[in-house]
Image 1: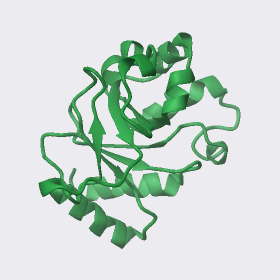
Image 2: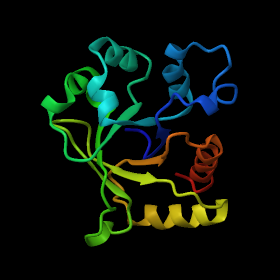
Image 3: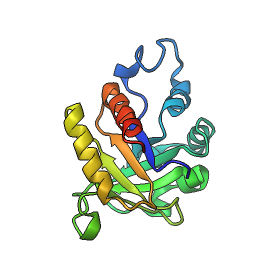
Image 4: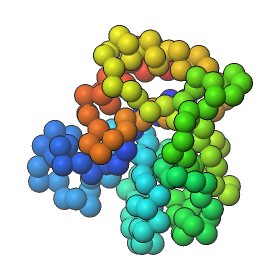
Amino acid sequence: MTRRFLIGAEGWDHGAWRGVLYPEDLPADWRLAYYALRFDVVMLSWFQVRSASVSTLIAWAADTDKEFRFIIRCAQPATLRELGPAQEVLGCRLAGVLLDQAPVTAGARAQCGYALHAVDGAAAPGRVLLLPPLGIRARANWLTAQLAQCPHDEPVYGLVPGPSPALQALDELANLIELLGL
């Protein structure tokens, strides 16, 4: 992986993004490809991935380049069987599973967000930072403190969570990453 820090959101099809990120007349089936031009990763619920048809998964893979990553958020560890064909179709684009639990609290990684769990041969595990709703200066301090605790050999996924993530927060995160030289 050429980048250490990948930026994205929870989902890519948000009504509030039409006319802002997406042109008003952009067809719904083009939105992931459009999103993937600007962002590196998307977090989806286990249900979204599990209920996606093989043709939908193939379309997701076709709409993103090989460096793009999908993270699945679920309540418990997922197995290949539980994910259906997602692992096979998405391949290395499937970064792993983010468990709905408290941040990691053991050892040197105590302040580094959430552990990303591999799914039977998925891409190398990494760390997920769910961006808190902070002002720009507080966000920069939080991000610097978090990254100081993250292993340098693992990718870090900076995600803006929620049912309708703010594009401004994604833009600020991208600017902070550039200003911090990451």
